[in-house]
Length: 383
Ligand code: FNR
Image (cartoon, rainbow, N blue to C red; front, side, top):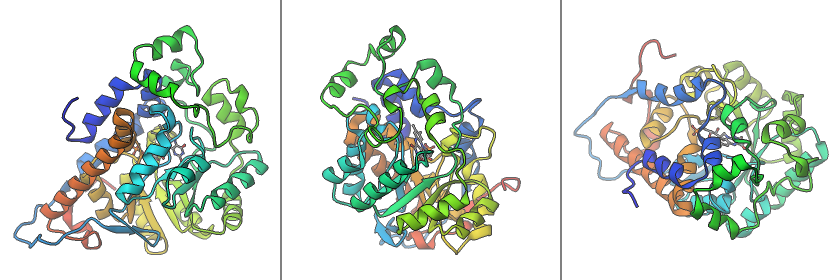
């Protein structure tokens, strides 16, 4: 077992352990992957101001998201097919989040269901909704999330139409994998993954099976999504969903100040500045680059969270200093899960918290609420 000191180590182990088609599913961006690459490289362009001789005896990374206190203002992002990276992956990730003290967000496109998470954890979790054409399905899943006591509905608005990821098409991605010569080759060298999967029956999309139309005939994730997801989704739909839900709503996938203002009008309690981890509009700017303009447009009215590209506690600190109230991590915890299951997710969270704590201290900050733009050196042409 290699010594794990950073998120990149977890990524390498994930790659070694998981079948290629599932690692590729996590690691890819759409088309040329320009946005996917820039999500991380743009963070590297922002630098810190080192400050010294500030008493750092009492300091904390604790922060709040939507009125609830957490160990740090970092949530686990909704990630489809999490349970194919590691058996019962959603349950393992939700457990790790609960024990650590950060929120977990379950994707519509999960292997484990809303009810599976409720039975295996006790903390309230967030539920992420993909709006499907089938209105009965949407009403039903919202009701199930209410019954499970979910504390926020995260409505994803940047995937009415699916951005193409070449690797998924080439790998013939389905869940569970169909056994063809190509997929057998893809799965064949990963014995430990295979043995673990044999121990669970949760190998299809349990949130939607039996509800959404034609999932049983799913030919590929790409064509199935095109059939099911509602291309007509608009701000009126979102206002209606908010009414139907009756609780806190987070709009995920905002990358433009005008859309951020619309989200406020539609009644959002928070937005997530996101380009879906570079998996949708290739050529869009990175979330961190768009954040300042969005903060300027809506700052103070509702909470602004950010995801896409966060791989370290330093990145978390940069996002907070640029004006985010909180962040979500996607791949950073998925690498941990794919590498070592629940322990890997905890390791990812530990790494990020330690990096955040140390970097805050070296910038002269003891509390999340003290973090401001002053700790950064941002290139003039960044915004
Ligand atoms: C995602 N994301 C995502 N978002 C969502 O709203 N519902 C979903 O089902 C999924 N599924 C999904 C699968 C995989 C493999 C990835 C990598 C991402 C997007 C996710 O919530 C988040 O926006 C990104 O992961 C953030 O980027 P980073 O942190 O992965 O760079």
